[in-house]
Length: 210
Ligand code: OGA
Ligand code: MN
Image (cartoon, rainbow, N blue to C red; front, side, top):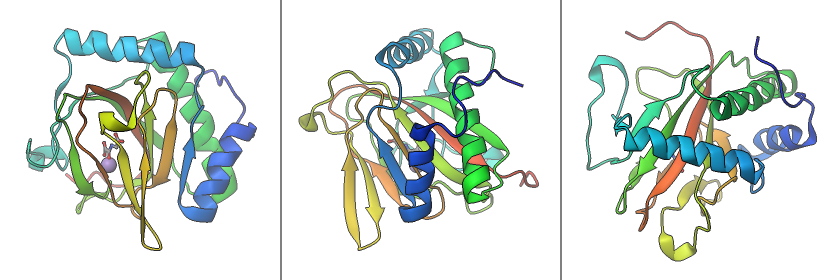
């Protein structure tokens, strides 16, 4: 069991839980202290410089294909025990997982996440975070790692909400966005500069589709 840096009834986590229950999404502009955001950004850049981030696929398993017309970010999945900054983030997500289950009865038993780096010109077309053949993803969480992001840098996360209306989030360092994976279509608008994030999903246990 990982050490939990904050309890699952911390007000910051309960705000996310309340927003998800009320409207299906949540934005927290100051989720992480700057020091941890910076450490995670350094870790992401270090992995990139070492060639560990590889072109992201669309879909999962043997059917996953790299299709640069849909998304052209580079990713690397994060595992526990690789770096202290990542482990601290995983600990926070473990507390959030408990909060989701305790308050919303989501029954999520797993968290997976990857670093993502969009090169200048990078984008990810409108999509849902559930695969046709795999509906285990319940809540999506994007944490941004960019310093001083400006609107003209592009790269916003655009969510298509009820109304209908569009809502854009600047990928500014320390900001965390969560939404219901099966209900909120979204896209990453073309970024004019390098765009770093740590993107993850709370999942229900289920049969492996493959
Ligand atoms: C994804 C995704 C959004 C973002 O990786 O599935 O939609 O803002 N990312 O990085
Ligand atoms: Mn997505």
